[in-house]
Length: 104
Image: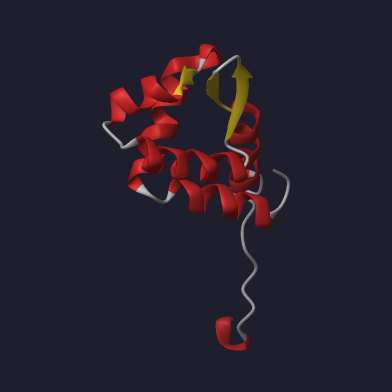
């Protein structure tokens, strides 16, 4: 996530309460991740609803999926999250020049 568009997509995906809950659950699960059924049990989301939210998180680059036989393991993509946070804070405390003519 190196630019405004990809960071905006990630933030938009996290802007829904259910997706934020799912993502935070995957963060807690760490590198082991969780299968869809376990995510549904923790979040109490219907499988069809959960599937929609997971697609959005995957599309935004925040979640990766790995098929293991009949199961799909979902993991938070920590590198993508770090990249988004770096983008958001890269220019921290550098100051902002005033551009109004009457600012002096």
